[in-house]
Image 1 (cartoon, rainbow, N blue to C red):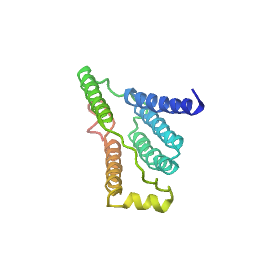
Image 2 (cartoon, rainbow, N blue to C red):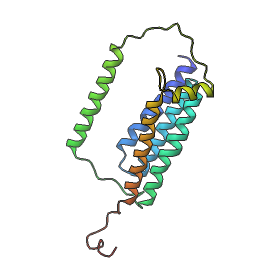
Image 3 (cartoon, helix red, strand yellow):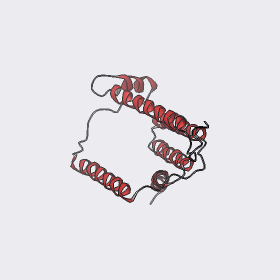
Image 4 (cartoon, rainbow, N blue to C red):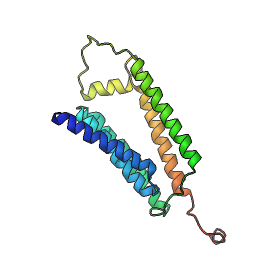
Length: 178
C-alpha cells in the first residue's frame, strides 16, 4: 500500500463518515457542519485526481455557497441547538430500502457497462477548453449538466428560504401573541 492509496482511503473515509453523520445527526447545525466536511472530502478527492478546477468549483459552489446558506438559515430560525424529532422506524426502513435499491442499481449499471479504451488525445485542461466544454451544446458539451447544477442551486436557495421562514416551535397560546 503506497501513499496515494492511503490518501485516497483517508479522503473516502472523511467523505463517507461525514456524510453518514450528516444524515444521522439529530441537530441541524451539526448536520450542516458534517455536510461541509463531506463536501470538502469530495473536493480533496478531486485534488487527489488532479482536477484542480473542478475541486475549486466544488469548494466555491457547494462548500462556500450551499453549506453557508444552510448554516445561515439555521441561525435565522433560532433553532441551531435544538434536536430534530426522532424519525419513525417505518420512515427509516423505507429510506434504507430506497438507498439500498439506488445503490444496487448504480452498481448494476457500473458492472454492466463495457469500458472501451479510446485512441483520442485527452483535452488540455486550460480555462478556454474548460469553458468551451462547459457551455458547448454539441457532443461532448456540458451545457445541460451546467443548467441542472444551476437548478440545484436554485432549489438550495428556496430550501434555505423555507427553513428561514418556518417559525420556531412555540408552546400553545404563544402563536396569537406573535
